Image (cartoon, rainbow, N blue to C red; front, side, top):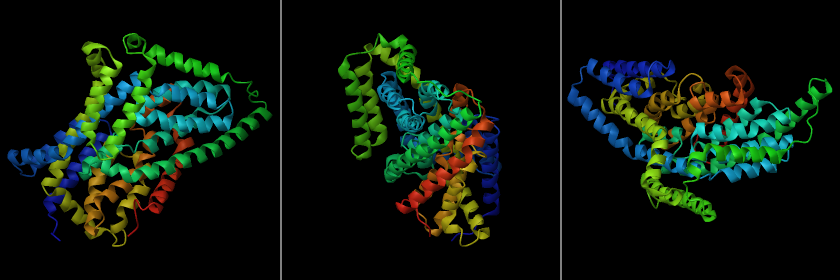
Length: 457
């Protein structure tokens, strides 16, 4: 084993600390933090400009396929959302609740699962909170219960390859996103079953809370709820939001089912390893555009409509290539890991990734998603890998432990959108949801251990 360099160790820690600090305090965008900080750090440490160029080339070659996948995945699911792919499912689940508290909580969990298939938190909350909040109000249910169930459901689904956290983890580890995702599919199934069970328990608890308030005279028992009216209002709102394009779309009845077949087909080709994910989504976009929109002008208009989200994620991943390239190719990350080995308890080293994963939800309150995956994960990987822990297992442990807490983190822009839509505040959301979310995360890690996705040394 090589000896750590004091200069490389201090330089690596300095770059990581400054980058994390800038991301945590929202002083600059992630692109600025992950490009400027490592380049300045490398130059101050005596590396030449030519070295920095080599570091960048090494990093960008590692992330290019993931970047392309993200850009086209966001465009693909944006087009399918324009076409109303998920609306009938959400409407059917609203009707299925029949205005019963326990059924509403279970329906909320399932709606969250369906709504987050596109991997975009903002879209999920825009679709679900306005649709379900009238139902919660009519039944005197807590809006924070609504946010809790949606947050956990979205966290489970967010393990998909085109979701931000897995894409970041795949970028850091240099693993194909689909390859990283496949072992997580059984865990997602288990997670959906657990959230349904949790929804039942929380629904029973909420029923008791409501009954106590009725008995105390604080509120009146809810009258029969017009669930169909709430579902109709949801459908009308979705149509109104797409009013500017709906008349120019291809609207034959068979097109909806063609979109279903296209979505399932593209995902199947990708998960079946028939096509790499970036090519699969490129083909998906190329087929979805003419299927749903008439003429090149409207097709380009829809690309422009979804381009900001696509380019934002692509820019973050490309900026991360500079950060990761400098730390990895310069030897700084290895030196930091070797220094950490000298001070870590020997028993912790092989299980460091599990210990850090178990703290993933609290860490979401201290670090942004970018800081966690682009700064903490590389350090844990560099350290645990010295004990022979596979990179994929390290990524899985860090991902599973953290991802359920995405939507209780104040660093999540989508959470602020959800709070605004629900008329809620962050402090109450944290008091209501944090320990349940953290407990759910620990249960998911336990399930991952049982399924053999991660293991104790």
